[in-house]
Length: 350
Image 1 (cartoon, rainbow, N blue to C red):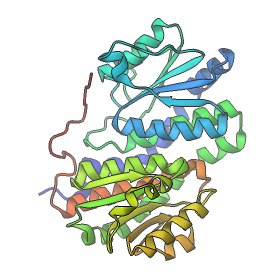
Image 2 (image 1 turned 60 degrees about the vertical axis):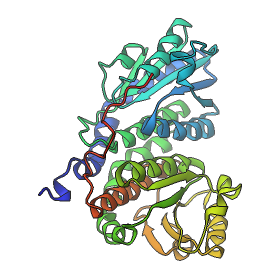
Image 3 (image 1 turned 90 degrees about the vertical axis):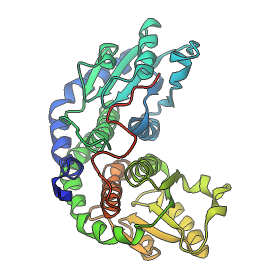
Image 4 (image 1 turned 135 degrees about the horizontal axis):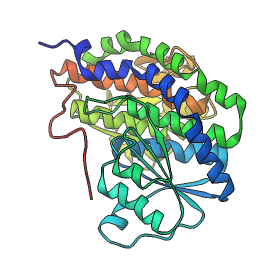
């Protein structure tokens, strides 16, 4: 029987530092070309077409390009293009497709319509020969190599890096670029959490429901972590911002209810701390992913991030323990971590 370390998923999670290095070494020119086009054309808004994991990368872009570059970023509604045939008008927009495979017809249709309207199009994809890439004026290749596990891991982190590099390049910020250049080694250090995460996974073998909380840049992390837990462990795991959770979902809490809190250091840590006090008062069981000692102290399960990075880069490290937790919990439940039931690697929606 195959051991966990022999699975595609285990290998691809641990390939992520190399993927980041390969991406950063090879895609500077393409990203510079896109940044130059954004400046020349006076782009003020970005419309992102994506599904699934790539949609979560789009959520990161909303914060990254919004906070650092003052761009208005929105997620497209692909069915307006592919089913209702009523596409909105793009005006001074970059239409950006994000897709591991570049094959989903609905995502391709968004970029195709953008080209008809004569606006700037770009694709972030692992397949530079895909239908999506063919509709893009500029293609940023993820350089992740073939991803064989159904659950996307290394392509997601490369997508985050692509967005971070675009933001740093647009800002012409050397400090940002230097910090991003250190992320391969920071992610490698974070992978050192593997044994700690593996040790806590059996506690949640019979978990059926949970929530994942993140806010700010790590709102995307909450969505991606919840997705990985759902698709690999079949548990019902819902993502929320700490603010949204207080508007109703708080009622689901009962003693022992599992809540994963993503709370790395940064501007959001004070807000996350207040939220965690609320969880403590409701006797929820907190699984904390953080490098902030006082936040970790409030948790039942302390998943201490071994490195501290700028908050805008923390989604690249904070997602790693989430990937590991989903993998180890699925393995504890005797599930096939490479091929979750009912889903395929490439999903083509219309």
